[in-house]
Amino acid sequence: MASLRRSRNERNTRIDALRAVILTIVIIMNMMTLSGLAYLSPDVRAEMLGPIDRAAWGFLSIFFDGKALAAFSFMFGLSFSMILSRAGPEHGASSVQIVRRSVVLGVIGIFNAIFLFWADILMTYAAMGLLLPLAARLPQRGIIGLGTALILAGPVALVLSGIDPPAPVPEGRDDSLQAFASASYADTVGQNLTMVTGAADGANGTLVLRLFMLSGLFLLGLAVGRSRLPSRLKALRGPMFRLGALCLTVGFAAGVALRLIETPQGIWFLLYLATPMMALGYLMLLSAALHGQRERWIHSFLAPLGRMSLTGYLGASILGQALFYGWGFRLMGQMGTLAVVAMAVAIALLLTAFAHLWFRRFAYGPWEWLWRSLTHLRPQPIIKRGVTC
Image (cartoon, rainbow, N blue to C red; front, side):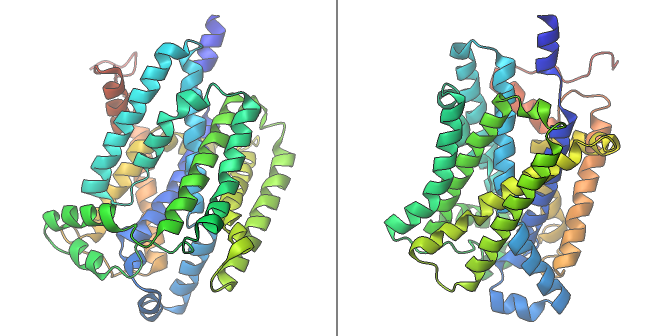
């Protein structure tokens, strides 16, 4: 019994490392918005950026835009499966805690959307978490089937509803550029509220696809976490590489075809499955790569950031504002694509260094501790055992 309890509480550093890689890509894509590049219209962006930066923007759009967020949703479901496994079989009490945990995450998401970065994903994850106690009662095949069906239902919903094809949400928002470049933080908060409440106007197709896709990937992550697959990845490296490469190739081909079609209609909406296909491909390839014999130093370097992914996600928004917004260093509109990528990587490295220093003394990341304490309705111990004050 004691060994079982230890195995439940023992962290998987490879999963933490994988979460850190996905978070870094999310940070890179978020910086494209925080830097102001995503608010530009395509014509203005093409005029402003040089050939190399335009090529880099196209590369990020094809390979990572939406895919990192999708992969992060899968990891969110995987993380919640681990929480359920630690909670034990008494789902009556644990369900209340899971719901409370999701509500607290939603409140943190609202804070993020208003005061930090309007394009928050935490509120969506919180809504998914509210359904977790019900989903967890389904058999394994039921969870996999429902998750797959939700992913496939997104394009079908577009066909049946007649909604316009998805379009980039912040593109062509000169009002955002002006507000976020203002030296007044009140203008930042006001524009965040404007974007939260009105950015989705005319982007119903994007919202529909995201709703189905992220929910489906969340359930697939939950199913994988409940299975024995995480403990068998080392033995399955070969098949994971091959299947991941296949998913990535098929998804890339679908994505390229989608860009060549001016206005997708009918069956062509199925090409939007490129995003979840590529996300699953990345997850399998990265999982296989991180389960080799010689990658232990990578795990130890990346795992701390993965352990505090909520702190990393919110911390990147704070640092991004400080760099690009008018109340900070006012770099909005001053950098090309590659410079923004370099800045985002530097932010991720800074957060990684912070995580290493933090976990020398503390058991949880700062925001993770707050999330945990509010969930349990009392302050949780944060100092590591054996560390004296």
